[in-house]
Image (tube, rainbow, N blue to C red; front, side, top):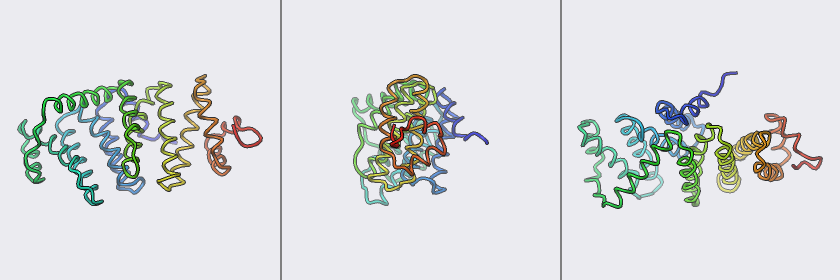
Length: 268
């Protein structure tokens, strides 16, 4: 059986490969086009990887980011959202390219018809500089930066689309970090995926995605337990206790070892 190619991309990404971020960016878009994930999830994940690629990449990466931001703006507009954030963010990136002599970016900026990009004050400029520096650190595999970006998105969790977007972003940063092998990053990923399970059960309505999330979390936590990470046991026990018998059966088919931690009553 061939290894999922995205696994190799993640391994390279956490080592600072811009080519890996480009591949993950395009893969996220392709999953949306194929209907394997929602359009919102596809664009949100692609945005994460596009920012990471743009922070350490070249002009093509910055132009690609602008295009994804425009797609994000169009998606929101179709749902009745008039917030100009994504369109103005795209305009900012295109303006930077145009000022550097990129004729294509200048034409695209004109075609957007957004008018002059707002003038940032010193505080806004410093904030943007710091955010982009954090993206660059994360893109180069700085685990503290990846953990911080994952956590910051979890703190911004809201209802509706905002909640899903925050969970998707938190997952991408945690997933990249998990491929470093760091136990804390793998614990973080398991926690984010469990929050996604809760979202699917409560708001998303996809029992399949909820079961998939439980399966991945069990695998991550069980591996950590086997490595002697004691902190992984309580969330594993709680997760198993929350599973239905059909879910346990499905997970056991993929991870037979889970049966060894279930008592006769069906719980850990």
